[in-house]
Length: 346
Image (cartoon, rainbow, N blue to C red; front, side, top):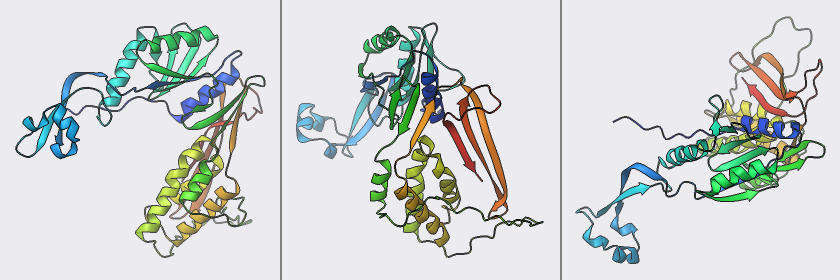
């Protein structure tokens, strides 16, 4: 039997940030957010699937209403046909996405064949990113946004956020007069610090210890391997949870954390007491600088990149590379209007 691909195309964070850049860089453009309620539910399926549940899992009133005692098998299971999308069904996302695609294409909306999750219209000045059932919309002229809402409203209950205050977990503050947008995730760090039971310690303005330069050295030696004791499973899980929790925040609004998270993540499979020191230092930095704000400004939307690399700066002879990608102008010294992507890898 051929396996069915249950994956759904969805916009990534880079696409979303480029859309934000495009909004503030396009005269008259605005950004609302749209949300489809119960998007996964009741989507017709080409053929039914079947679910087996223990009779003991059903409430008594349901058993009586549907006379399930007459439908139970010898092992105490009830076989249920599934004919429409429901929560927990592996195919729910893809069948809902395919149906949405058909409904949008009928009205001349189309998804990019190069960038998953990015949609445009054949002639209307409107585009949007789609993450599951959340639309981040850029439009010039409210009538075009109304058209998209009317198309979706034929089949779904559409919740509208005309001010575009929140999208993919990011709080958005639009300044259309100055053509700027400010991204933040207020309270995210404080909630995470509470979960990790990390209390405020000393002031820490550097999330990761820098490599001390040796001026005048003629030979570059690799960094010595970490020989400190290994951590137990509980501490290992703690470090993995820290990196997992803050990685999205770092990618979304605070790129200053990326190097530290990359260095910690490279050791998290076999962490040591030195890895724990790096992690606690990082949490001290988070405590000191808990609420970052990333600002995008108007530009000509020309991609610029600042990149650099360091040699033999990591254990086992590894090097490190970094990149700062931002939209700006066609100039000799382009303005930094806010990074759409930062990379820090060893």
